[in-house]
Length: 408
Ligand code: CTP
Image 1: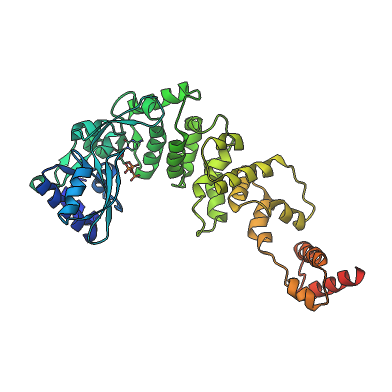
Image 2: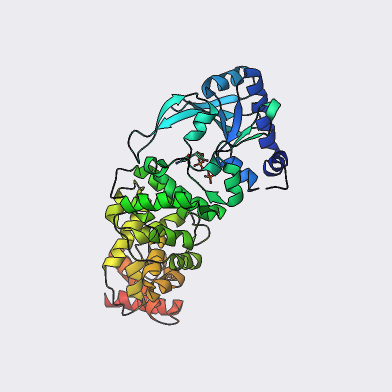
């Protein structure tokens, strides 16, 4: 980060639409008379020259009043106001939507649970103190007088250079244990390490963790983001460093590499939305999953895996394999492969799952079938034959269908 100036990086990382938008917000902040900053992870990513898709802006004071002024004076439009959090979503004339937040002081009345806002509209310094890691506390001035100046109150720039994640105070993980999973995600996303003391506080927290009250809604969100990185090493660290305790009381034995390999081989590239859940489902049982507020589809994946694992199949033929797996979501079967290395499951996903009979109900009716139940029975028999016999042709299907009808 020594080579390019912050302004050069800003021009490299932000597209024209984003640059135009921040200039308008900057103008508006100047005329309204408030300090405005780009803040948090965006500034970190900007310095690291990572691509930027979305920015967080904070104004030192009340964002709602600021945005009302902006709308009245035709700088932008307000889309949505959250009175409770003092945040506003605005839309600029180029249609870009940006969130503007008020500076705020947060307190954690119960450790591990959601913070409450103690004061909306504090100084930038106070707002920075509520944040997680020094590398996430950097603010970039937007007002024209200091446009592009970096404010670093915690040593964040040094830590970015050292590639270290360092919390701001010793109670940080106690206040908000989701930060442990955030740290794990940043470690693998940015290729950073935890600073020594931060690592110790993290280890101590997990060692002493004994089902303390915790906000599972947020745990789910951060776990989803972490496992979405699809990193075997991240997963192994989640297990070996006891981070899993934040999610579950007990876990199954499994390896990140095995899961990664099963995903790479069997999960279609257009079906990645539940990739994160494959990692989670390999680990936890239905009972622990219930705490995590999963949606119906997500829960089905966990339950179906548990069903597969509680049985002890002894397959005699392909049709039995087919029937064993056919009701389970693909994600559950991928977990099953990761955990058991089942050849049958691999054969199901690569071959059997896609086998269809050539004849359908309409074709059977053309052969003289009338009765509904018999059609269902015959189609099942055709599939069984097709799965179990080599080179079972369309003609073989017709002969079998005719025979079943005749015998009936
Ligand atoms: N933050 C925090 N504690 C949390 C969550 C967020 O202090 N538990 C602060 C950090 O300053 C963070 C900012 O809120 O930078 C924005 O959070 P978020 O958008 O979740 O993360 P980013 O740091 O922007 O990282 P990424 O873009 O990779 O999600």
